[in-house]
Each structure stands twice: as structure tokens, then as C-alpha cells.
Length: 273
Image 1 (tube, one colour):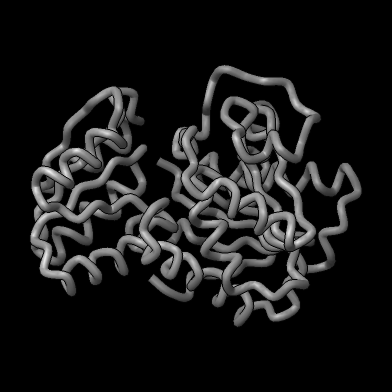
Image 2: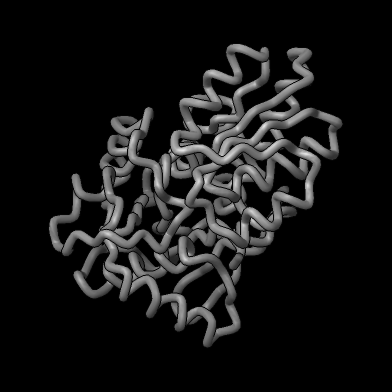
């Protein structure tokens, strides 16, 4: 789960977290969380997820003989659900997966693989920040899609003050970005389904990390996400719409004359499903 490629494309760089073992950056946190649960003698784990974290958890729990229960929204992406069904984990579709997972954890003494409230997850994501520094010491800015914001917060722990952090959220769900970016039209269709978190436990810390870096967080319209995806695919970069969102934020930053420096990095967080 380390040393994913950093690829130069035109005048920017792509950090290919979509090339992790299970196809997403979630592997970074899940591996350390499972090591921690084993260290603390847990034999069961539970997770609520929009898909990618559950896929990562299912894979690594199977590798480590850990019983896993997965709570998913009943509106889960069908492709992700098909992947999950290949694993022995128990899958439960509910309307409120987060609260159900928390209740299950307490009742069954199962380790809660909730990355937004587990400090171990931040350590996993900090690896990405360290790798980028090692691969591109002159990195000037980084563009990160935001769901719960845990990935951004972890990465920020390893970045020097000179690196500006730019977040990105969809106009259909932008609890962080709307604090920065007022130039958008609200939308109802969320096409970046991995970024559906509305309650964000670390919200203030995420906003502070962005501000401290002299960065910003952009709200992106669906049309721009799709256009960004088409551009990346024209360059043989096949990634999730969340990664395309981050590239669209990069484009918006350039169009609005933000100072992103000469070595911007765009985080591709997940594989195309």
C-alpha cells in the first residue's frame, strides 16, 4: 500500500492512489486499522461505507481472518455492491449505515472501522503526504477530493507549510467547500457517490488545515466533473469521478488565477468502478 505512482501529465502531476491493492486510497487507513484491532485482540470488525472503504475492509479482513460486518446505504453503487458480494463479509443494506454500524460495534464488541473518528486512519493517510514529498520535493500544491475529509487531514500532517492544500466537493454535497467557494449553483444529483458524507466530525480541523496552508476548497458542478473525466480518459487515465472532481478543481483554480505554483499534484483517490 505504499509508493503508488506519481505521474506527470501536461503541467501537473497525478498521485495514483487508485492503483492501491483494492483500487482506492482507503487501503492506506484500513491496513493500519486492522493491525490495530489485532493488537487490541479484536476478532470482529464493522464498517459503514459508500463502497470503497468496505471493499478495502472486506479484502484485508479476509486476509487476516477477521469477521467483518458491512452496513451500506440502500442506495449503494451497484458495481461496488457486486464486488463486495465476492467476499465472505456480511452485508446489511440500511437507510442509516453509520448509526447502525456504531450500535453494532458497541453491542458485539466489534472494532469500528470508521475512519473519520479513528486516529489510526490519519496515520495511514499521512503516508500519502510523505510519499508525495519524497517523489516530488518541490511540490507546490495538492488537490484533494473531500468526503469526510480524513484523507486531506492525514495528508496535511506531512506537508510543509509551503504546500497549498486545495479541497474539492460536488455542488450536490459541499459542507466544507461552501465555506470557501460561493461561485456555484446547488445541484441535487450526486455523481461522486463516494463523497456523500454530510456530518463531518473533523470539519473544523479540515477547514483550519486548508486555511493554514493558504489554500482553498472548490465547489464543482457535475458538468465540470464529467468534462474532467472525459479529458483524463482521453489521456488514458481511467479513474473514479472523485479523481475527476479533483482535476476539475485544479482547472477552476487556474481559471480563477489562484497561485498553485509550478508543481501541482492532483490526488486520484479511487479506481473507476
